[in-house]
Length: 269
Image (cartoon, rainbow, N blue to C red):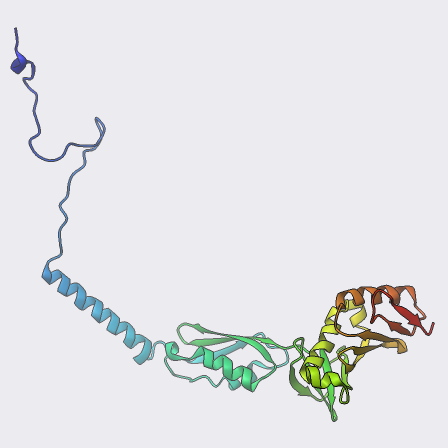
């Protein structure tokens, strides 16, 4: 009768290493000891990193590879690309990485008020791109024999010899009004701009003049001798809706009053 020793004959017991986690018949995991880099290897790695950093700094600042050679302007409408690039006065042949893009943007807005926004971007390896958005006139003001353009924010940004086609004339007649002292000329000008922005396109194209006597007394002159008493800037959307309905209903009307939109009036029919 075979004893316990005989029953375990042929079995081998592992005396070293952890038990395998692999399933029966699968690949066995091998334990690889982690090697710490030697001191010599660390020195070599450090020297290589320093050399690469020095080379990168040299390439960016001292070499001729990455220098500013071209300035390109896009998005212009009234201005020309040449006017924009000349006003930017970018430091040609300077390292591209050293160009102060914020300073370029500030310089452009100061020298060319027609520019509303400008994005200055580096385009490697040799170019600065200027993406311009120009201000567009919402109203014009007569200035002697010329016209000053006013944008959607009430900013006067350019003087031109000929009024832009389809842009209404703004007449400021508030010199003796208490509103001038209370709100200031800039606020009254913005109020006039906001009135035109409230108008639907179909009505806006008929506006020839916006007259501001005070903050509460804004009037519009339309084509065919028609006029509109608008009142203040308040309730602009409701006034525009009422005026549109009145213009459609009273074709023969000449004077429209929407200063109180809940009680509009038409006369001259």
